[in-house]
Amino acid sequence: MSVRGSHISLSEVPGPPESEPVAASDGSPTVPPSFESVYRAHAKTVSRWAGRLLGPGGDCEDVVQEVFIVARHKLPRFDPRAEITTWLYEITVRVVQDWRRRRRWWWWATGRGASPSRGRAQLAPPSLGEGASDPVGRFEMRERVLLVYRILEGLGEAYRTTFILFELEGLSGERVAEITGARPGTVWVRLARARRVFVERMRQLEAQEKAEQQQVEARRRP
Image (cartoon, rainbow, N blue to C red):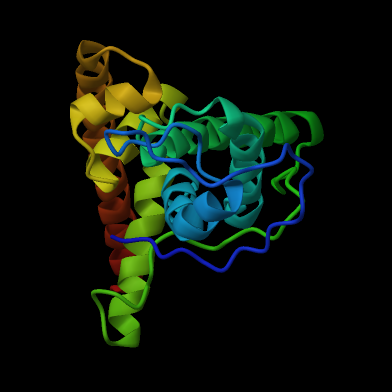
């Protein structure tokens, strides 16, 4: 599965004056890059990350805007020697987790499924046009994506994030540890548990679907 970034309209946010990076004698920058250059270079990538982490029904546009609001506020303190994508990934993970906490609170407080976000919810993170050229194939792909995220929804936030970053985003365990702030050993423990729960729930759903299909066939018999 893959995720394509969508066009994002980012409203103006007041911030400190920015400057382009200045290189030191060894070629490394000594001041953070400008917000505009960071946004232009990474907006679509952040949108892809947010789509993966949110899953179907997540307000990707609203989350991406919030990520860059946080990034603009923290950019003056960014270490230019660090990797900007890792820094943005850390912000994205935390913003998504906060968005999901707010959504769970909204469901509990109101009893309604609508998210508390301001924007318009996206349908599904993967591009349904990839990997299937016919309508039936695209429909089946959509159903698989929805099934995966339906199972993941029942996992704890730390386990869900670890599973998505490792299995869907393809990051190494060390990279996941760096982004989430967990120890590598903790990452592997979370991943093993998430995989076990995922497989168990997948088998339960398959058994349930098989039983329902048998009931349908039994009703059709004369």
